[in-house]
Length: 125
Image (cartoon, rainbow, N blue to C red; front, side, top):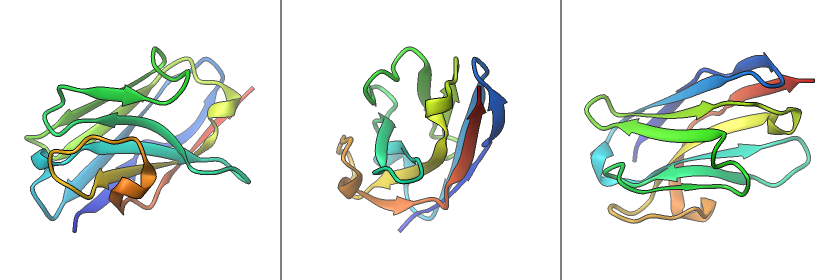
């Protein structure tokens, strides 16, 4: 099992930027795909981005590529999400997650077995 702690959420105006970070501990971080998901009130959890164990492959949710960038630092056991040109519809709780299986890439939340507590992102218009 891996423990995940997110940070960096907050309130920002539309068009602004935020950088979320997730610190991982408890198992070999560099073997696992990491992902970011979000959930807005009354909506299903939504895939935001994922990055493969080596960082060599990334995937993004619909219409997020170009505004959001996921990255990781395996030496520091961290994964980050840079969010630019934020819109009010990006308002949600953002969760960091670790894949269940080493050396596997996915965007489906059921394939992620460890989750952080979430960090609130609020974008005002």
